[in-house]
Length: 260
Image (cartoon, rainbow, N blue to C red; front, side, top):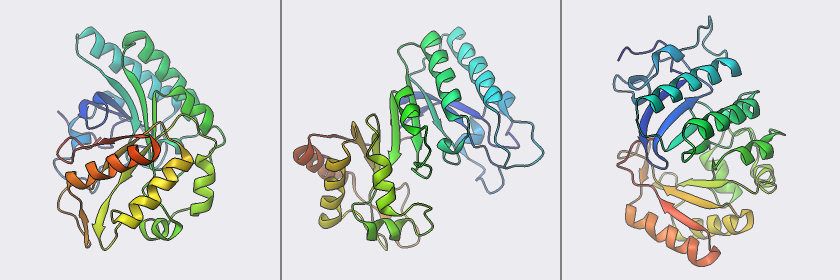
């Protein structure tokens, strides 16, 4: 496949760690500069979905995104291929797109028409939770997944020193949401949110915020900068504690699978 000069709006379908065979939709495409030669998203880019822009940081329009998504979804259906999910994620935070609600509603309708048994998913690092439309947006998705790795303000500040929201405000942004899933990445070493005290603090926040469920994972590879992944056994232990103390289901996401 020809490598796109920009990260494509569409990539895949690929086998996702969380969502099975999923078509990825990238609302915030960026230049390919700095990508490794084996970048999964470049290799699986849908060539005709590359936005024609003069500057790298211009977001593609809602029309361009939906038109390309419709074309690709119809292609997949006519080819008789399997599609278990349509997932908004990408190189940035998809909730930063100003037309997120319009795009999401159109993608929901496309999915329902061509793959009614598949799920519409959102993956966000929680950077734009102040978006006033976010509650309405979450209601469109089968799974709206937001990162939440920290049980205390001190841990949040250590993990996200450049965050635009303080911890108290972030927690308040989650409180009105009634249809969201948490994603927590546990690590150890120079940054550590996997010790007993941190895990219990995180579980307490989960009990307060009541996500539908939680995806529990660790960083890929051997780590860097003094930060290391934790074992699958540790993740399983955290998931078991979450269920025991809150009744919220914890799904351990294996490190070895694909990175979506």
